[in-house]
Each structure stands twice: as structure tokens, then as C-alpha cells.
Length: 365
Image (cartoon, rainbow, N blue to C red; front, top):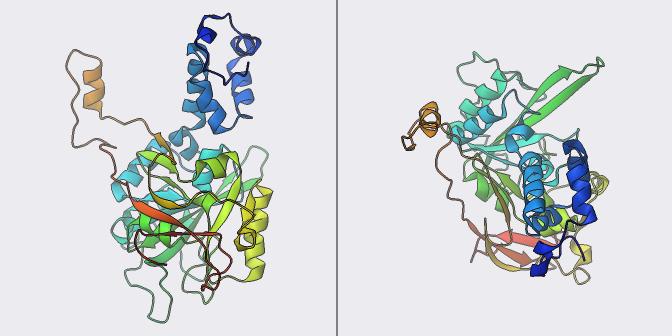
């Protein structure tokens, strides 16, 4: 009987299997190492077998998909990062979000943070306070004491504005390891004048792009990077194909040179993905088409633990019922049930290398 076979009710009354006995005898590090070879679906199925496997798999899941622990690799305090995301209504996406869901680390990748203009300066000041400095070529570095971290003017009229994209600012932080080697963490603050989730769904900005003041602009999007992390939850839009089948469907191919497209494909193939473009239409069934929405049944949503203020923490240790306060670092939930459509790519359109198209409902694109 498979360890994921929980259809037989008599399974609950049998003595522990060899697999369960092994898990009991293993230390915590051994269990976590073993579970690191399981995909997300198998770990979720283990929670339905019995109480023992549910407790072990939930313990592993809590640690493996702990966003604050993940953010500690980039910042001094992951909880503070969640707070700044909440204050500025910023959204994390791209390769960093993929690493979180896939439980993998790509040393050369950066973190893409999408934010609207109103919250960009607050976010930039916090990032600089964390030890990052601006690393955009040909532009001055902003200091923490600068009154205006982000320029207030839009790009000139002769520059393309792709899907509400205003500016892209690159930041880097260098650190020295114990072996005296120097490593760098890079992140991008991507300022948009639309809802960040709308930009990620319909007009994705690739982290391979330079600042949009440059003549050349890269707009290459695939299903593997369509993952969203807010201060409250993490959402993977195509979990089965991204995390189980390891397939990335090209959803947008814009102004991009073939050499840079090959760099993109080679990068994700090195990470274990099969990049599927227009050439595979008719041979690959695809991820399914039709009307969908963010956080629907096809998504995988991880709810983060809600943070409370000191007053609530004190009340939780007494007989007084804890009530929500306005000064919660992270309170409430974001309403992000945004509808979208997954459409098949058609030959003869402006974009001929994409496998599918993500579009707003009832809007032809």
C-alpha cells in the first residue's frame, strides 16, 4: 500500500508502517532532509494519511514555507519586511517567489518588488536602511538622507510605457562570508501606475530588463514565474505545472532579441524547467484554458500567520479576549480575487512565440 493511499479506513487501525517507524526514529534534520525530495503535492497528501504523518508533514511545511524565514536571507528581519510590504501594498513576484514555493535557491537571481508610486519612496528608504544601495548604471546612488528617494517625474514621451511600468530601480547589498568571500544580494523596486497584480498578470516586467530609459526593453513572461507574495499570503497560479511537472509555458514574448531569449530559456532549463513556446502548440496539452481568478481552486495559496500587537499578546495570556487593534503590524486580508482568462495563442498575431495568453476577462489581447 502506498503511503499516500488514505482511501482505506482500516489503515488507521494498523500498526505503524516501516516508513512511519523510520520517521519516528529519525532526528528532525533527517526528516527535513528526506521531505526535501518530496514535491509539494506529496507533502500535502501525507497530511491526509493519519495523525502521525499529518503532524510530521505539517511541522515540515511550517518551516519549509515560512516566508519570514525566507525573507531573513535578504533582510535583517523577515517580520519587518512583511510589515513594509503591508504598509506600501507592495507585491513580491518573479524568481524570488518561485524560490519560495519550489524550496530552491538561485544564487544569481534577484528579488522583484512591485509597488505603486505612492509607496515607492517609503519602500526605497526602508531598503536603503537595510544596507542596500542603488546600483543602476549611469545614475546616482541615493542616500538615506535624500529627501526624495525616487524621482517624481515620469519617463519622457519617447520612452515606451509597458502596461503601467514607470521606473525600475536596482539595489544591491554586499556581504562577507566566513571564508572571506564577498556575496551580493540584488533586488528591484518596480514602480507601476496600475494595481501591481494587474501588471504581473497582464504586462509582466522581466527582471532581465534594464531601466526602461534604455532603448532596448525585454518583455518575456512564463507561467513558472507567475507567483505572487503579499504580506498576508503566497499564491502560485500554476502549481501543478510549475512545481510538479516543472513546465514553464511562455505567456508573453515582446521586444526581445533571440540571444536574450536563449539566455532566459537556458537559465530556466538549468533550474530543471522545460520551457514550452509556440513551437509546441498541438503537441502539448497546456495548463488548461478558460476563465480563472487569483486564489481559485487551481491555485495553491499559503496563508501566513497573522501578527498581533503587544496588547493582543498580553491579552492572549490572560482571560481577556484579544481584540483587533488599528496599530497591528499586519492586520486584515487583501482582497485579491482578481479574474483573468487563460487563452490559447493564435498564429499570425504580433507575438508568435508564446504558448498561451493571460488576459483580462472579455478583453481581447
